Length: 114
Length: 111
Image 1 (cartoon, each protein chain N blue to C red):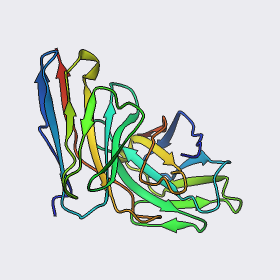
Image 2 (tube, rainbow over the protein chains, first blue to last red):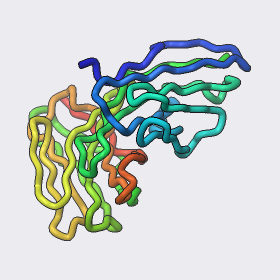
Image 3 (cartoon, chains in turn green, purple):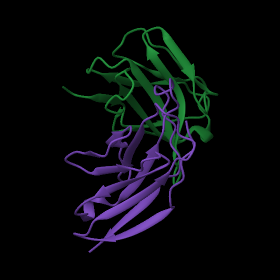
C-alpha cells in the first residue's frame, strides 16, 4: 500500500513549456484533489474530482487542466508554464462518504519555472 | 467551507499539553470538524475529526463544545516533532470532497 504517489519530486521548466504532474493512489479513493502552496503561504485548491470522469475547478484553476480517466490516477497538466506557477504541488485523495477519515496527501512536487 | 477562526501562532513547552482552539460558529448540524497539520515542507497530515462527541486517537484528542461552535485539539504531551501548522477545517455539508485550507495556527514546541 503506497498511498498517494506524486512524480516527479522536482522539476525545472522554461517559460512556455508544458508538462504533466502525475498523481496515483492505490487506496480506491473516490475523491482526489490538487493543491499548490507558494512559499510562506497556505494551500490553495486547484482542481478536484469526485470520481472517474468527473472533475471541477477549485480556487485557482487558471493555467491548469485535469482529467480523471481512472479511479487511481489524477494528472495535472500545465499548459504553458509561467514563473507565477513556481510552487509546491500536492495531490490528495479520500474516501467519498461523509465523515470519512480525511485526505491522504502525497509528498509534493517542487516546480520551478524560469 | 464553514468559516473557521484560529490563532495565528502558539507556543508550548516540550512535554506539556498543547491546546489549539478553533471557532466555527456558523457550523451546520451535520458538518464535521477536521484537523490537519503540516510539518515544514511536507504534505499535510490528517489528525482527527469529529461531529458532536469528543474523539481521541493515537495522535490527539478533539473536544467539541456542546453547541458545536468551537473545538479544541489537544496534543497531550507535545514533542519537538509536533512543531507544525495546524489547520481546523469544516467542509461544507455535501461538499466534503472539496477541502479548503485557511491560514491555520503555527505551533512551536520549545525545549
